[in-house]
Length: 258
Ligand code: ADP
Ligand code: MG
Image (cartoon, helix red, strand yellow):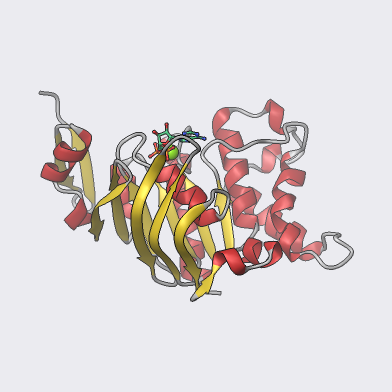
């Protein structure tokens, strides 16, 4: 199940403007790459291009095969994607919505089996959504909806998981539970993970390597402690921050009032 992801010379954008310029990155099978960078630096655009929902120049290779050459079913098994701003079928219940994530695994009849329901139920438990299983998405709070979107992407059990700002709208406990769950999948199934995270402390604590984007170009790449220096953050984010450590050495990026 472990999948190797390579992005080579990726250039992408929208009708009027090119947003990403010649971005290259690599994630080892079972690795976790965190994409960081200021607002508008191209983090979501990069994830969309890798997910195959935005045209681009350059190459996205999954285990050495061009993503563009895969069938849609192969692609859905290879790459799961939770967008930052998803289009939600708000009339669906949480269970039915998360079950959509199983689509690439269903047989010819297209009917879900016990195994699919078990996957969904266990994700609802892990993401604290059991109480909402039969509720329509329309009736959920922002954080509950966000967790449902992630549950759907996780239900896909793809080799590569692309999560765009997965902790947005989650309180600190639910954010940690979600990131712990993603990390467990990495350990149990060897899932390869790419997340954009605006919270630099969470990025530093969970991602194995970081890619810092600035105006659509790679401004830094490497282990968190190398990328997240006070100087780089002041230069790229125009921010005053201190890079602290918890008692057991985990990095904490703290804003400092001037
Ligand atoms: P980030 O996720 O790093 O905050 P995005 O990748 O969403 O940044 O956006 C990068 C740039 O592309 C921004 O200037 C944004 O305004 C622009 N952009 C994003 N989505 C679209 C779109 N659908 N059409 C046109 N421009 C877009
Ligand atoms: Mg974004």
